[in-house]
Image 1 (cartoon, rainbow over the protein chains, first blue to last red):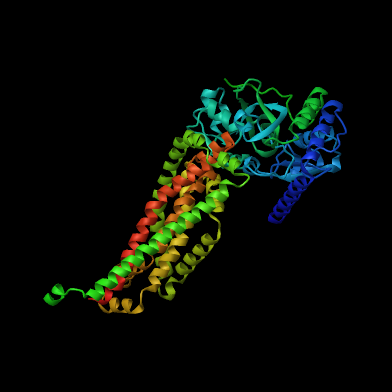
Image 2: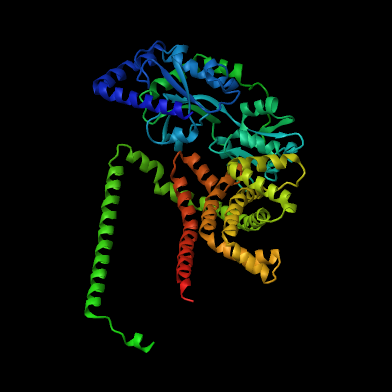
Length: 289
Length: 285
């Protein structure tokens, strides 16, 4: 781990040095050429990526289903892995040109050079976050759901008022937390490092229910929990739902091109097809009031 | 006695004293100037670094710090409560373990062995893992009533820190010279009385700095209970950081932790200095 980090660090240093050596004139060239994919929508030469000719994409460690299946993004299986490859293709990078790295939340928002071109791990687009990083156009809109187990007191909840009397958990840094804090309140809210810990607490009976995005809720109910149950969805606190975007370093030269690529995928129906393939959205989950 | 009171230092001695005073002042001045220059060089270096503006914005954003201060302070209150109960638990359980390990006689071998195995195990296992095992594992057994996560956190901290503290106490107990025990027994005190009245008070005094060190260490480790879902100062800072994509809340939490540990650190220094002074005076009976 530390060795690979060091290696990545070295790669960043080399890349930065290379950029510095090639100077300003070459970056002007890149800006003019980077307009190509937005117009043609395919085969774009010489985008200013971290490693020339390669597109370095970051995801979480571990990456969760159904976003990335089996924690292996390079297979293209799972919604975000598939979206990442589709975006890469739009930008003119073949499957072999994509390099996957792992990045955690804190490292992703810390100032300083990054070792990825863009980062895909269910980052919700918010105004506050835009001060620290760039976002592409949204590639998915979700809502938040309440997951519990059959024998939990939360299993019989039919309204948000019922949830105020049980202990609900959420992962820190997630819009699930924000939705839970806003709609259920923070009095009894338990906050965990990530969804894994929240699930452990639910299984141990330390909390009664979890707030999590809807696709993950389906996955938890069907594949993780013994007696999983989705109580319902939280009503959208933001108009139009919670939108996920690709994260790019602040003021990245790639932001425009990546956004255009996502827009193109939305326009030609690719995103919808991938959603239908990887995310269970067909089911009707009642919205709690 | 009266001769001592009327004694006046000679002109030469007064001269010497003045010289010592002057040179003490001079070295203090040099130390101050050198510290300031050193700090200035570091500060200028950091401020002129290419990423300083970004770092300042991410880590020292006064507006964000002020906005989340009360939430973090509220979290800190939970840490202080956990610290309070952990300290009591560790004092009792740690002493018990230390006494068990210093029991003499072959009859007590199983107890000595258990205590030794316990300290070996819990000094080796990282606290964060103990927290996960106790906080998620024990409730899952389903034999205890549902307890809040910070209770399990407190128990995990007691289990881990008792192991450290018992070793420190044992070192203190064993540092008391055997002649003290022999003298106490020859005065007719039982083994337990010897331990309680003679050995532990002396041993404890020897290890006060080490104990205080463990206490300060525990003071910040109570921040780890956040992994069990409790919203303490660390988690409150973590939530604020996640909402703003800014690290200033962590800096605020760090300063608050320093603020609560500072009195303890100063107090320890004072106690240690006083004890050293007393021990060095021991010659004049």
